[in-house]
Image 1 (cartoon, rainbow, N blue to C red):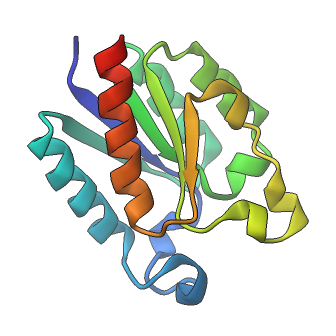
Image 2: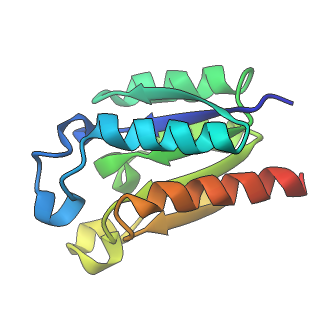
Amino acid sequence: MSKEILLLSGPNLDQLGTRSPEIYGAATLTEHVENFTRRAAQLGFSVRHVQSNYEGDLIEAIHAARLSSAAIVINAGALTHSSWALADALAMFGGAKVEVHLSNPAAREPFRHVSTLAGVVNGSIAGFGAVSYELALDAVQRLLALS
């Protein structure tokens, strides 16, 4: 089995560090990915990161992951609340799937309370800032150990 984790970052996450730091923190996406990759390596995983502001790019990455990755950790940004196409792509992926959010969508605007992805992932981690990514890695490790 592959030991690769596909880390997906959706629209506007390339603006982390400057976009609403009071909500998302001061760390940049690059810093989050570096920390995730370093911690994943300690657990024996490699990481392939894809960030795109375009839904189709994320879907294509998920399709490709079906042949190469054991797990997907996804922070889909605002697509979480609107993309049934992304949910369909994730539903086809047979490995572990964890949805991540830096903020707590349930404590924010009402449109953020619904996740189109929640029904097709193993679980969601939200509201713990950068620690959300660490918790996602822990979840992936445990999920893969069960399979």
